[in-house]
Image (cartoon, rainbow, N blue to C red; front, side, top):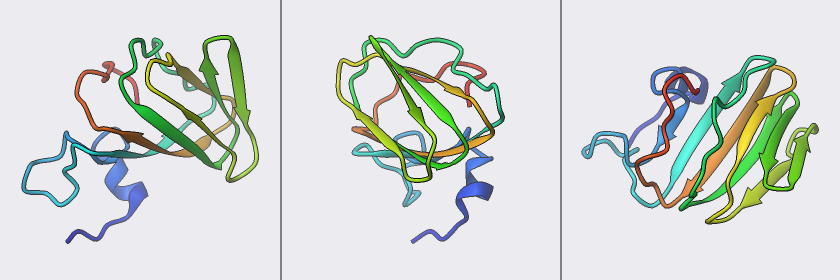
Length: 119
């Protein structure tokens, strides 16, 4: 069992709370799913697009104003609870129009998507 606070724990691992990247003995280790509590200052953006996506993702706006860029479409999340889901093979990027908190769930949890400097 593990009990924590998303805001506190997220600061320790670039926002990630659960996934393959946690130690094997940690109850937050999972190869099935990843969960991220993303806190982004206004103007924060992904440094490059994710290409060749192998996961399905759900991104939910907790607070702020957050834009998700998908091929041929820009999705603006502006009300608490707004969300977007995209599947395998869909490239993506993002931009925080205002200071934002977003909850991201991705499955399965697979290595290879971290970009140095991205939060």
